[in-house]
Image 1 (spheres, rainbow, N blue to C red):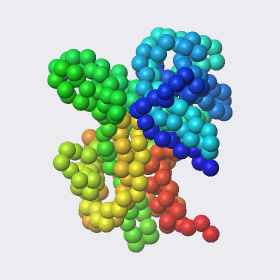
Image 2 (cartoon, rainbow, N blue to C red):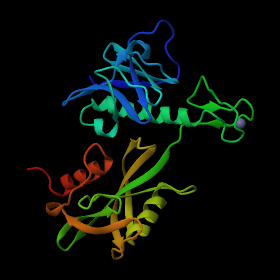
Image 3 (cartoon, rainbow, N blue to C red):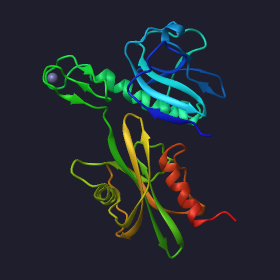
Length: 284
Ligand SMILES: [Zn+2]
């Protein structure tokens, strides 16, 4: 049975029992690890690890059949060294080592810790804020401004076409990418814009193409630092590739048997491209 995570802001009543503690120093996560795997400490309190937590939040609990494990996140002051066997590691680099459910939970945790750190004071009047009990929010007791964890929605879209040479996918190399890495196009949603309008605008701005038949593909939280990627497929509907030189180094149509290097899992960009591959070259 797969594990299920139930989100909550209300910590369990009663004595502390061993729980998963997602402890961060900046954006680096405390783990035990070797060459093959990494694990999150499971302890009653961070004091059991010899660490003092600056601030903490309850995340919810993991259900694994009849077993239930509470999950907390918190921040450890910069400069504090963990005891031998524990280390603070770059979260993104931990993907191959962590259980996947735990990796995405750590992605939730890092965003809550970052929001907690950066919203200690009211953005309007500067008073110290207080955590709300019923929801993940911080409220200013002076001017009543409420702040929620920040999320930046972004679209990511795979554009495809059927050319005289067969099916092709549009991939681009961003200026900030390594020279060999190509991906689908993506961009942040602007205020007042629908997701479909954003897809059309981004494709037109970045490569000068028109698209049609926009279909929802899926979504993925991307906690680097706080995006929500909303993925679409779309069909080419006209125009010649003309790249925006500020954003992109190059963009081309690729056939399935001539793909360049693409982003690795777990990114939804990888899922978009591999699902296209499967659709144009079904397994025998
Ligand atoms: Zn205020």
